[in-house]
Every structure is written in structure tokens, then in C-alpha cells.
Amino acid sequence: MLSVTTTSADIDDKHKFDDILIQGELDVSIEDLNLTGNENNDISIFPNPTSGIICIDTEETQTVRIYNAEGKQVYYGKDCEIDLSKFPNGVYIIKVITEGEVITKKISKQ
Image (cartoon, rainbow, N blue to C red):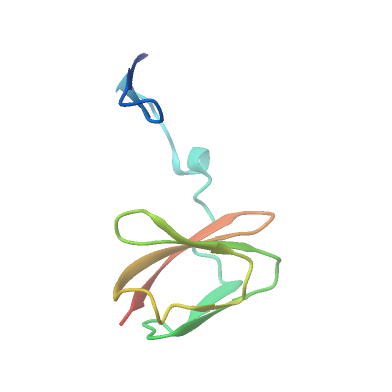
């Protein structure tokens, strides 16, 4: 059983803080999260590691989202070539969203 508690507070006239606490147990399988297919061989991202432009090779139209190590989205677009040269060095998570699935890969920027 899950319980949900919410609280709100106004910080000032323009900002509001919402807090949601969810407690309990929940059984979730990989299939429920739609994470199957992450080992898809129909997509490749190269070079990895990279110091500049990466290429995303896939047969389907895709949307690409890139997240830094803190989980902040740093890129959103539909490009097959993405220039990471101005990004700080580190590990990034790349999500490629196609019509049939979401494929998540890691890439290292050096």
C-alpha cells in the first residue's frame, strides 16, 4: 500500500515550493518500466569516448536527450550529429527516443 503526503509553501510572490512524499512498497518489473530493448543493436553512438562530435546511427526517426552526471538535461533535439566539444568533460546519459522504444546509453566526453 502506498501513502502520499503533499505540502506547499510560497517562497515569494513568484516562487512556490511543492513537496511530495510517497511511502510504501511497490513491485515493479523491467517490463513495467519499458526498459527492455536497451541492448538494441539497431543503434550506435560513436565515437565513445569523444572530445567533440558524436554520431547517432539508427534506422528510425528519433528524438535525442542528453543528461549530465547530475541528471540535468543539457541537450534536446533531433540531430544525428551532436557537438559535445563545449560540454565539460565527464559521463553523459543519452536517451534516444524512437517510435517503438527508449534506448539509454552512456558516453564519455574527454
